[in-house]
Length: 136
Figure (cartoon, rainbow, N blue to C red):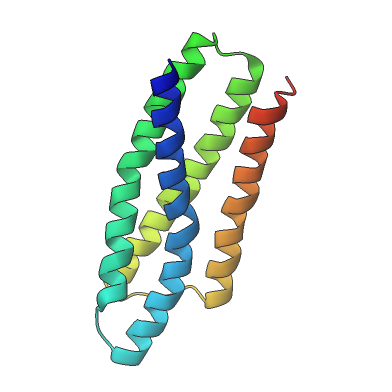
């Protein structure tokens, strides 16, 4: 079981990197696109980061469900899973922004993307609180 926890934590860390970095990368990608008028290296990097971390997110989810089943899904695990689902929806929305950016469509402002980025921070803080404190 310790190896499953290690794999889970490693994959969560990798997924979190993308959750925090991709919206910020979209800001820089948008600026680059405005400057050079075409798809540049930042776009390629952003797409690769998003795709790679999507796989890590799936592994994190599978190992997390396995660990939750061992603990017989106490209430705190259900709360954590609900928060993770919200974070996954945020990540899916980020993917939609990446796909639009790939076509050269940048409709969101830098400010919108910064706020969008910070929403995920609050989600992660809530998840960490539930996992550490186990209030239920």
